[in-house]
Length: 87
Image (cartoon, rainbow, N blue to C red; front, side, top):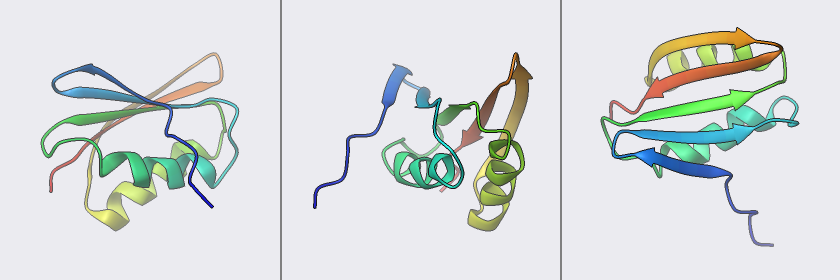
């Protein structure tokens, strides 16, 4: 069975956005794991999710996988997390 395409958009050379709106845990973390392999080393993956669990899940995922957690903020129930692919 083929995987569904990632909702991943290249914003510029150094920024890629992954849309995980409407997806529940653990899907945002799984998709982030697939997307980070597409993002060039040194670039930033921005994950946008409205699952409240994504806040801590993405922080823990970065730590466990040695990706650089940059920023995270919440606006009207939507979490935006920036992760740098350091390796």
